[in-house]
Image (cartoon, rainbow, N blue to C red; front, side, top):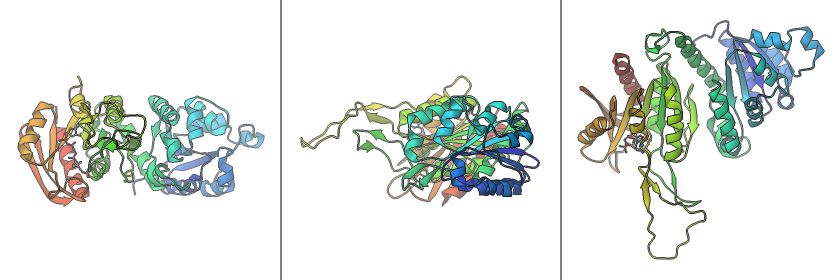
Length: 415
Ligand code: PMT
């Protein structure tokens, strides 16, 4: 286990059912050598008692701004100065909204305004609340201020829903903090490639796309494809394992977010395009493993299409090519594409490598027999301007590890 020695973590707990996991988070942080002090919103105290956090952290827990006893000890300004980093876990939709608005109406929000330490949020909420444009706008605003968002994960929720909004597991949060702090250390150097760290990509900021896109026809139907996201998720996990700080832009999948990876969920190619183009300026490396729809219905209709005629003709229009747009930027990141082909795999992949101006392309044969999509195994031919490497059929997790190593080699060697 890598340590986070002597790091002073101010943990803010807000009022959601995931508050019970924050108790374990305190233990995991202390195991890594962190000093932890806890503050809670009033709603959080309805889920877990402050006494629990006091016993686990070894320090009194702050629950109110106007508490004479607490202010006589380590007052809130002193606490804000003490923190090396501030982590809000769970961060509810309400807390996120108050932070985005810059409010200071309780102890946790006041401390966030009063500290100069980096702020991390581990969101936890119902999937519909997570998807709500108001929440996404608040998160975008906070990201714009440099706030790091860890998670959330996908899956079944306490309320019975299924989808994004589960708080990352405590160990995943600690891993993500570790990865981010090694990157932050590297940011103080001039080139992340030369930064010391736990892996060859320590400090490198990687943006990865994965999964399918869904292009709506009407409110209940869409055009999609067979991508499960497994290949792209495995690549994101492998890059994080080499020390990269990874953001994963994902189409709809049923997969959990890899440990230490920040995930942005999108549905359509247009949303993926916006999510990537909005973040790629801060990326050193871009890997496009998503199966993006090349076309979308020209005019999705507002009401369910009824079966009336014997034929239905749908007009499709081209989607933007995200990979080509990234590679064409004036100062592009090291850009790696994928090519999914049913025939003449190498020839067509090389054409894409040249036409899109990529640094590398990983080609796989797809189709009913060969797989590529949906399966746990895959094989790749990886091409670059003056080289190639073949990876035979193997589990996608192992394949992604080998591909990530090759990407790291080529990235480090790039001018
Ligand atoms: O998700 P899995 O079930 O694990 O399956 C893995 C996979 C087969 C989806 C994956 O290995 C893969 O090949 N991903 C790329 C699929 C694809 O769209 O290939 P393409 O040849 O159509 O596109 C070429 C490249 O351009 C890809 O990097 C793609 O992400 C990108 N692209 C394509 C169209 C578009 N509008 N924007 C893009 O960025």
